[in-house]
Length: 152
Image (cartoon, rainbow, N blue to C red; front, side):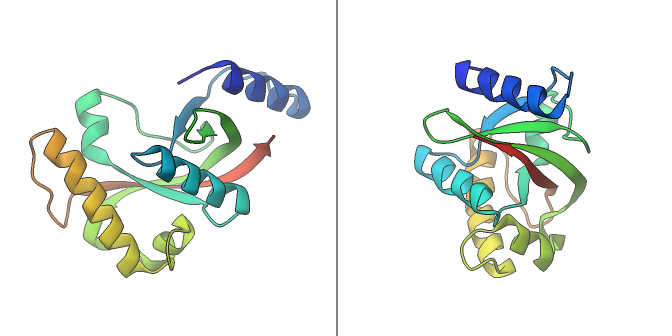
């Protein structure tokens, strides 16, 4: 999802950090404008340093998994670039084995594993319904950690 806002942020980042790479991915968190704004703000506040996504969607869309060193431009609900993060760790694990630490690093709600499971089960069930599949407690989840490397 590249636009003028993302291109400008990437140019500013590469100039400041003398990075010659042209490789980045731009995307918003969540499934709504409000969720994208809320989660982008958590990134800017330093509370959100991890995310989780549905492995099955990578398979279906034949998309590569994130990898260490990947740069992502985080967009708000209006599609505007707010931060650049760099992936620092990626692992695929069953939903029911996501750790308390990972839930905490996602920075959402009370940061507990119980909150994480509740919110993500609802989110993943909706995604699975869209692809006409069933959610189960051991679906593979892509758990990604990142650090903020640039903001506006």
